[in-house]
Image 1 (cartoon, rainbow, N blue to C red):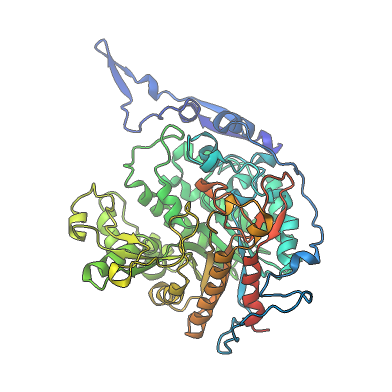
Image 2 (cartoon, rainbow, N blue to C red):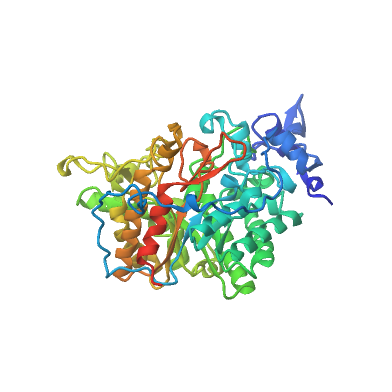
Length: 586
């Protein structure tokens, strides 16, 4: 049947909660009530199955969406040679002449190995647009952007964003023109399976097949992420998405379909992207999704538990289907620096590691189970992993992939860690570690580095901590496994407010970020850390989740006011490329 007519058996109680903005039936609601002395079945517990096709889901659960000017796959056009000229001081025109720049002499002790895989990254919901086209089902983010009041900056939506779904050939041509070696993209689960389970959309399979083939035609290595936060809406409203262990089998089946379709050409896979972020999005805003009785403080850990089960099973399946592939997951977080040399600050740093990267990294790389600090909190409400689950989780990654954007200071809460642990209402509970980007007054009270855009208060240019960060990953988790910096990037402050094109394209702090970050990786390589690649975020300005179009991470400017969505290289892209022109072994 045509993709837009694919159907899904959806219960009335789940649909009604979303349609009418009411809280769904509480799972603890008793099935009976007493009326006039007689016990009868609770009428609110009645549920009847009915059929929704993909179009129904969009119309009833999300609402109208915008469409782009281009709604068919566009062919690539040649990139003008004038667009490939770097800015000064990477390049100076032959006329007029006379500029002088104290160029830094190349450090001959540094080098990127010949096979070092440098590239760029993007994510389906942030760049594709075409949200309803060719059978795609809605995700939770389509509801968040369309229906949740004041959730998105300036009420933006990702209905069109970069229209990469139809403009990918031109985007890849522009990457190839700068010599980019790798493109990390994510697959939209609800494009492949509009309801997250059940019918498979062959048109979506064909689309990603062509995207992958286009990459290979340009000698660009494709890296595929199965899940980058866009949970199919049907799964969220049916059983709570990542809150339910039901998602494990659905995710593994989705992985099987993707591996079977693309695994003959895609050698690098990431199962899930940044679970510490998407798990902490729970609980989702009330009245817009079916709600569940799991206490809100526990929901991120239910999510994390199911992520570990789903990831490990998808990994084992992938290795059985594609034995020569490289499969991992993507961690994220900043390097954690003790604010002072006190014992309490050292403990606060360890707790920050344990509840962020360690929540998943310890089971996957070290033990198959949670670390002691996490276990002390979750053991009262989560089931322990079975021996079989532990065995499947342990070693379920071929590399350590980390989205390593920044660093921060950590320190003990006011009153101390013990007092925080004894007070479940403390806003820092259960981690009980505070953070800052400011040195102590004794050290001058300076920032750890220049601040990014105010809409990204978590991001500072702390590139001088990157070598220590990479050493920590190697010594703590990766051990002999290679490390990939799977995302890193910078939001130039107030870029959205600029109107003059040449001003937009000259992004000095982002350029310095990439320059210094590449030097930091070179330092780590020279000190024996096995970094095999890095993927800059992002290859274009895009839809930055709840910040929408308010912040810009792109190394290419996209004029969202022009319906043709033209792209322009920024100075930072040339700075990034130049590091490999200078230091990569030929």
